[in-house]
Image (cartoon, rainbow, N blue to C red; front, side):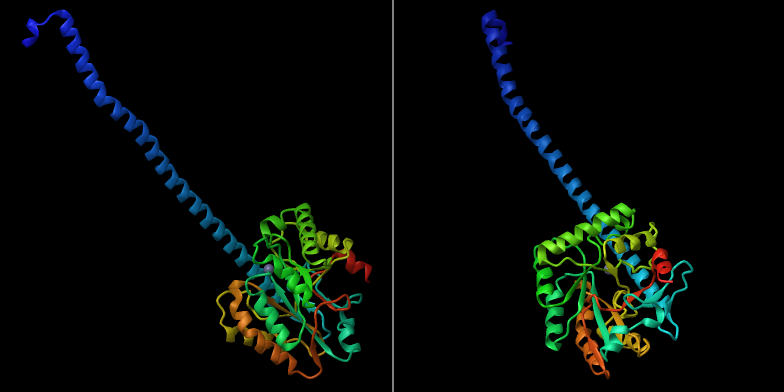
Length: 336
Ligand SMILES: [Zn+2]
């Protein structure tokens, strides 16, 4: 009403003043909105992306668990389906696998040539899957008993584990290869992926230790049923590379998870005792943080073996007998 007495200029001035007033309220709200909305979105997306990351990690862990289970099953199968015949030949129920326990150059009855000629039965302790946070402890125990073993290692890049390769080698143990990735899916995807993995590990070990390893243990053993590539092709490739592969004829059973120290001890002893006395023993054990019970059982296992007559624990060398669940067809024929 008061406006009626105002001039147009004054009315315009008041309108402007009101507009400015309004803008003064709206601008901070707009600015706040511009800041808040992206912030909230960033938080929401951040949380979501974290959740997804965790999910991916969980899935990766699950995948690794599944691979480990496959690994364990294959190793168990290879061990328990393998049977001794009187002449030191191991047979499995797998039709295509030509399973023999043979001397380095001979076949079946020539087993244990080295053991017999040296007058002692040889026992090889072989640790798969290391190095791990347990490697130092294993080395310490082996040192306590003055025995040398063989470590079939994988490719570990963890800064805590990298120095272990050299420690194993410097302590006088044999370093063998057990694949860089230890991923069945990758390793056995094709002949090429197997070759790449092998070369990578061989060079990795050489860089860290100066040792050019020429011993191999297939993840799951040579009689594994997981590989989609013919194992014979892979074995041929190892032969070409002058690499000898080793399976096992005794096991502490730690491929199965959750065994106690005493279960592992008794499985190892039973398994050891089941090998004919005139045959060398290659015992499968694991070097991993998941296998702390194996480490706890190790002193007892070593003491049991050392208490046997005429028996010594030795590392794998070029003179060792080989225990192979499967041999390449070509190799077998050439030995006929
Ligand atoms: Zn393994």
